[in-house]
Image 1 (cartoon, helix red, strand yellow):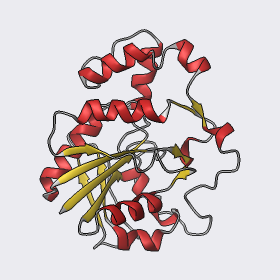
Image 2: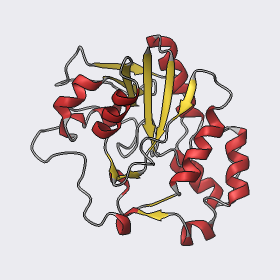
Image 3: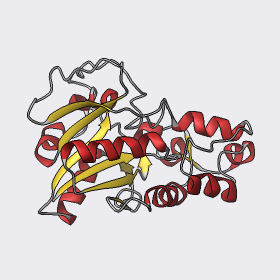
Image 4: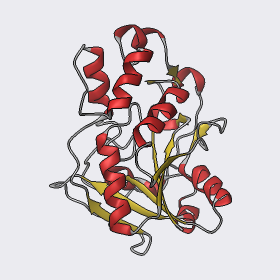
Length: 237
């Protein structure tokens, strides 16, 4: 089985994520795409993130109508910060016969040489870096047989913009799936009150969290299409 793995905070998940997953699945002949909401993302230290269960359930709602999509709890059920290496090791254990394709933003892929356990990553999965049309892509310094870059005709949607719109009282219809809009409204996510009081403050949870990247290797250069904090336009996002 050819299994795509799309990790992200998904706070909230939006149509850009879904289009990217669908296009990559078609282009690379993937049998399934597994969405993996992060548990305690090390990139979000000092930032307020919605509870993992809300992010997981929004992802379930958003992907339910596509039989090729499914959602995994592997990261949110694992204690401690979320690292790509740990995600892929766990998924390899769960799907020993599967060939894994890790889908991420091209800008995040540009930092992969400094990620935790980078040499092991190449053995665990093939990496697909996605970007919006018009953004320069480069895989300089990355193993060509392990990395593929591709443009995705997705709309310029970001999770950050969606959160800001809700906080400002603006609609997010047609930016995120209908069921996710209803979930956000029902649970009061991203309102000024929620932003001020609830959610998970990862600076408090992980005061000494170790970044995924090591300090020595220089990252490959990729013209940013999104913030590297989250794969696939999660936080330009």
